[in-house]
Image (cartoon, rainbow, N blue to C red; front, side, top):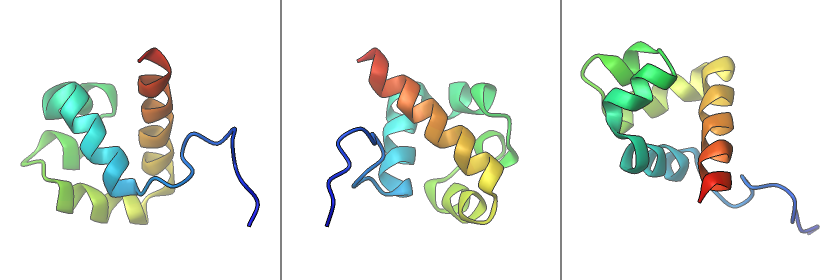
Length: 73
């Protein structure tokens, strides 16, 4: 298997990414940054994961925000 040294998402699940974003920003700020109902109305990890797995554009926004977050650390 080829290593992916330049891919910050390598080895991270969508759940891990979402949990870290919620820990860092909180649901309210996350819903402001990415305006989707699963972040703004009765947010939960489970419902958000279900939505993100079915919605590529929303997942891309989450992954992009995660990359920006880890680059600031």
